[in-house]
Image (tube, rainbow, N blue to C red; front, side):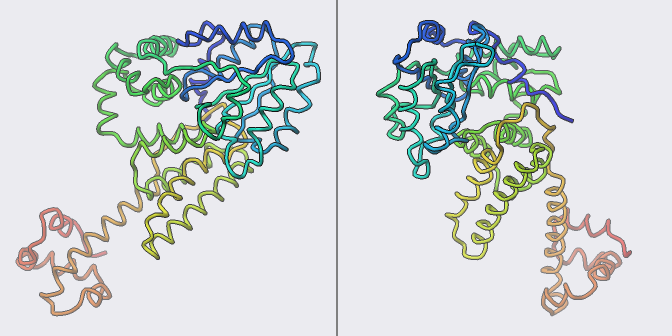
Length: 400
């Protein structure tokens, strides 16, 4: 079942709906007074602060069309020119005005981008329409060519109080039970990222939003943390966001593999996206096998990068709906199997000196018969000095 994403459902409809951001009205002024040759806007700041939403809300208010390009999709100069080049000079559909938006410009920087950032800087000076760029930090070396030709507007982390107000509004709309302390804890955990706070609210919305419930999730329920992290990986096209989401969970690589494998086919419904995602997963598995074979643990970096940023960038575009993220059943089956094998190994190691033979030979013997012997000889079971949990496990088994 596909569920609407609340961060999309409750996106700002007007510029005044954008939380915080004292300079947001400069976007409206820039568009209304735009003339050819005017410097483009560079909206910069942390993720989830409303940069892209502010542009869309302004366009909606003014009745303008948006030509949007995500820089992670069109990374090279050639791609960018082919994608937005014609839009720089052609009139908008139905005689509307339009805005050129280059989103997540940080994603178009790197060795393989072949002039992508420089191409944006050049195109921005040629356009006859308002040209707006969003990114994380214009002061980094990789996007410095844009800083020189743009007007900068910073978007700060959203204040906790403002996030609280937005979360309460959504709770009322969705008829959720909540208290002030629960909402405040969710807002504080988001660290200024409004989109993350809304995503987290949706993930915990099956129970009352109270301080006790949220605190329990944060401190004890790793499942909810992994759901939140995977949700962010699936819903972003920015590598840094995906990497941070998985890094903050702290799960081991086997768990991440299991979670991705369980949910990827339900989330990526387009065959092309799914094929690219599984290609990424297989590459991560190759590195995992090399770690096991060569004990070269540096390869863990590549595993985590592929299973976070690689999965996020495997899709052509962000999905507007989301599947219900489930805990991996395969992982649980493996866990139960490993638990059973662990008990078997413990018993064999205890029996080996008593029966004057190796654990390998004992394992080759029919193990159920050994269990039967132990069950019918309680004294022998006591002599093996097994822990109580293993003893109980032996007592519960019967010869089948």
